[in-house]
Length: 154
Length: 169
Figure 1: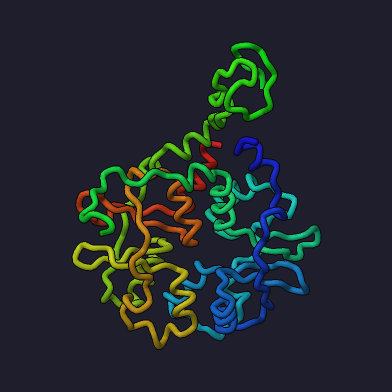
Figure 2: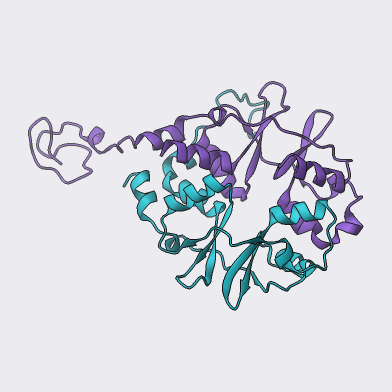
């Protein structure tokens, strides 16, 4: 199957989504930063009664830390409200288009009721593409211009 | 798989024809992919028009590096000392290594929090090679070195590759 067909037929639930890091809208910024650090996650989904209402990413963290913002304010003050999300039935091509157009590296995946199922990361897409080109990617020729300084072995 | 010489029906993937012993291995070579596949494996990262990298010094304070990244809208900056690339400092490093301790760690030098000796590329490396490096290391940015001078010539991000892909799909 060629790349284009596969991209437009494979859906996000086949990719293995990252377990989302969910926080309450009233959680203080400091706590969210600590949670992201502990879980080594790059984004937190802000959920009210189980439904996605906002997202807070590394990029927001960078901006706030550079401003030396108040770390005790609630996450809902600084999150990006109503983020762009995708259904689990969206295709990989949809995700690539959404990321490319919006400049996002993480897109929440939600069910029909707006409950988060996971996050699709740009790293998932990279891995997916690399999987598609196994022969070419793993068999790249060594640099022909490299001259060995010393003879190998004895 | 029909032999082009004698029309004998062979099992798929056979190297020689059972009937006339003519070679058949050229028939089972993989088909060249579609245009986008060919371009990903043959186009060098040069076609992504890598951005000029804005660099920081390892002695610069974390606070000033951060402010620069926000101002210039950069996710990551190469750290250069005496013209040589010694590390890379990214959003991820900020979040994971500094996070809420910004007030106490802000005046420390970038050297303590950067990722040393990052993976690099040359302008002539293929896009798919860049993708592979990003996948293996989990990177979103790769600095590009000039082959002759070994100095930083630019930087590409995974976003550049996604944009390239959407433009060509």
